[in-house]
Amino acid sequence: MDAELSQRLTKLLDHVDQWLPPAPVTVDWSTHVAAIWQRHPLGGRLVPVPPRDAMTMDDLLGIERQKLALLDNTRAFLQGLPANHALLWGSRGSGKSSVVRALLNSLGGEGLRLIQVDRHDLASLPMLVEQLRHVPHRFVVYCDDLSFEGNDDAYKALKSVLDGALTGPPENVLLYATSNRRHLLPESMDDNSGSQLVGEELHHGDAVEEKISLSDRFGLWLGFHPFSQATYLEVCEHWVRQVGKPGDWDDAARAEAVRFATLRGGRSGRTAWQFAAHFVGRKRLEEKH
Image 1 (cartoon, rainbow, N blue to C red):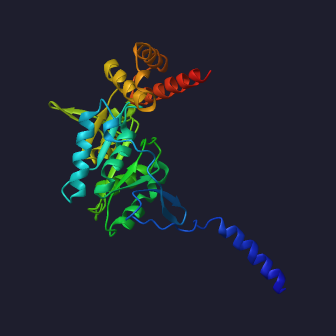
Image 2: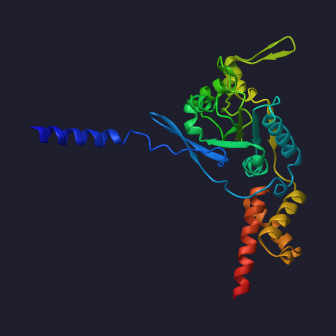
Image 3: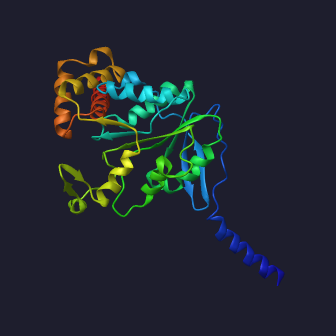
């Protein structure tokens, strides 16, 4: 009987073990500068990660105004001065995510610590923020490619942390997000049915107000837009020189860069980097044969 009970308990523990969180990893913020937040049914945990690359602000061309605004806002935050949550919105591949990575490389030595939260883990964002409240470091909590569908309630946790809870976010935490949408939530024609014109003022209906109110909680909006051809070629030249040899950038490379962007259907920093990798890699292979 004891053997049968022991066997049943072992099977039960095997099933329970699948629901237990992984063993916690200690994040030493005196040495680690970045981590990712992983939600779990029983809570969540921070996992330290090294910076993805050594990209600096000088590597990002064509977005000077956005870089300066984000640097100033973050430096103010690191020095304990008033600063805003930031929404970086705009066209794909235009440098939104890259500028956040470069920000960490530039300001990690000044005390910046970065935590990335996946959109699907936002429901546990209040738990993460509370964990950081009394940690003696200053954190930017970052969500990349943020957007919500019409039936997605995860945005409510984000709204609460940004400006809706009684306690508010702690003074050592800022939220930065990137998105292709300026208003984060999808908008439809039906949303306008509750809007009305009162005198000369447009009063939005509840649906529109709900969707605008989320992005309104970010005090700093930075728009990122497609590059002009001149800017695109400048970025192509920068990356070709970075990953290749000084003589790789010439008139032939310039013409091929234009064709590459035409085939991709747009000009952006991402397209420029992809062209440089394609062009330099192929050139080195040809030199070997």
